[in-house]
Length: 231
Image (cartoon, rainbow, N blue to C red; front, side, top):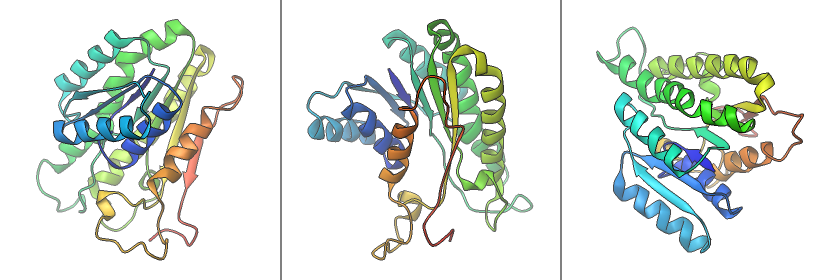
């Protein structure tokens, strides 16, 4: 059973489609019910036998994270968790709007932290699983306009490293995904006719591939950038 947060569009939607296409039971969430319903319909249209279910949750809200986690556990034991929920608000830590850091940290980092902790006991009992944290290259280097977003992604990277260390002997793998610019809503006004930035399926393809290595192997990090470099 696959659990994916922030999966009503963009990378999350592509990852959900990739796993649903393989026959995996796929659980997704988003704060937009309309977008979720469209995503489920799109996936079932492309893959009529897909087993995909959705749950409305604002992952910046602690209680709604817990509600989603409880619902997931009612459906079964997760084997794959993709912590993808997040948002980018450009700015700088020195003068960004008051409260921006708290909101971004809650959504981009604490949603992954709390949901992972909620699902881990069941995964540990099963003795297997794979956790993917969508970290972004903003986890690796500071950049102009990164602000709270970059800070939150650094935190998610640190979380990934500690999880990997702690879970080595449990059979649960951890992969941090560092992607460059991807053609999602954040870049919706970007003219990609010259294929300058990544397609969302580039990310889902790599995540799916990482699940196909042998049990004794783990892809600890996926770094994927545009061929011509970062923008």
